[in-house]
Image (tube, rainbow, N blue to C red; front, side, top):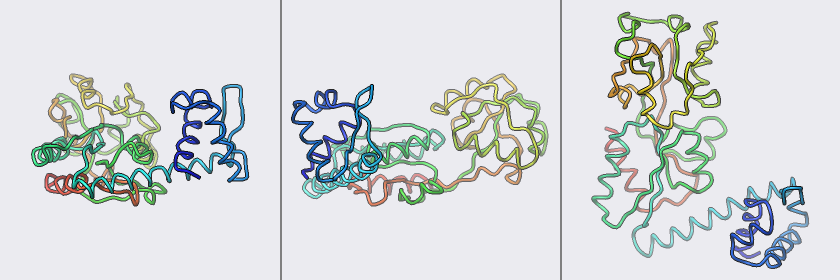
Length: 297
């Protein structure tokens, strides 16, 4: 099997058909068909089946595609490593970071990197933590600054710790609950909320904390994806509560931290540089990791 056969098989899966994949690859349909047949002959099983909408992977094909994607990523890593050895640099570094990461950490480190390395280029993406992990797994990011992956995901990724922090409940500076010296979770049960959607880990943690105390889950007035800190402007002058980083941009928008102890709502987490397990890290990626540690204090 040639390495381009892997590219061809992945293209058919991505485009859902021979015709569209051949057009995207810039080759003829007969050539692509022969490549698929060649791989299927070696595998001894059909990898695709025809459907009303084109072609879909068989059970065996889906398993093969998982390995093919890993092989492709390893091959790309190998080429990047050779380029790094030859030039001593890696031209483009693709970095993702979670919206809840303090801006001075990620942006300060990136600013210092571009000053040190005049030819370096950065491609930054600000996404939710789960989206960042998906982009890493697909090879679309070289590294991400995000909360530590947990559960089954932990084995897929490598992490270099940066710092520990805690998310808190915030409210507009005129909210009545800010006049209380200490709050319990029960005091927040009947409040309006601005929260991420139910499938997001943070929302699930908040809902679980209320359930554990026999309280009804918060009913958000506004559901968001936390893709932009500017959404906190929706809380100004309202009675809504939300979750934010205590030292983040929410404080700059007139929001304040409610006096709710960690024993009531524990949103502590570890932040680190997350990469694919075993992935090649260019000299730029290694240097940015050092700078991130320095800017994390």
